[in-house]
Image (cartoon, rainbow, N blue to C red; front, side, top):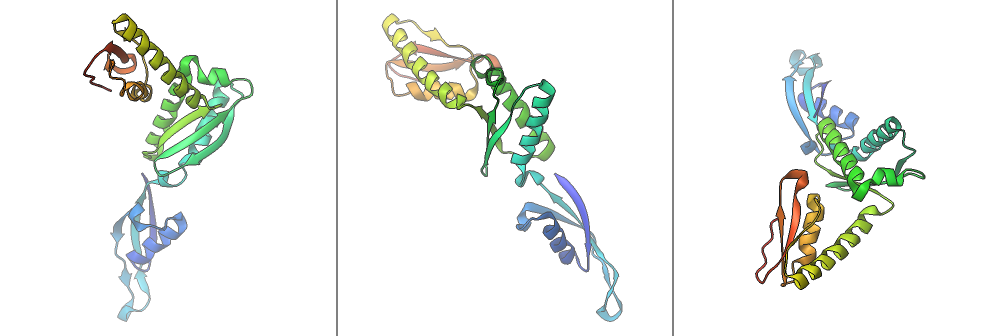
Length: 218
């Protein structure tokens, strides 16, 4: 939350001046605190003391994408990675960032996407703390997330077939919440198996078991 102060003939005048300078059109995006209502001159002419207001506003409503780009370029510089931001698409709830690196794409992705996930978590945390933004920042490179989604769907179906043939449950590797949900959704209509998440935190895994009545626990 950013705070700044403005003066004007009246509190309303000071508020309008603040919104104009800050480039904010919707007054609901700011909070106004009247520090001094001001004082008119004799017989209502002139101003003997200007009104003063304090404006509180969430800067993250506007330039989250630009801030993400600055953070990432600084991180790449410190890590010695020849990479950058190729494209940014920002909506009301998300910021999709496509990265690029001619030599280090594998390094940025890491084993099964672990490095990319860690980088995404760090950028979300930094942006949230510095701007108060609640937008979800999603990092991707060379369409890795689409490829990973396709691979996970295929893997879950293959393991489900093994579980059905053997009659024994199988436990998958630890996954993040998005990947676990993807597995649940992929197998939710297969009445021959059930999926259940087990474990805590980063070690949370999915167990696929033979079943007639399926229950899910994301």
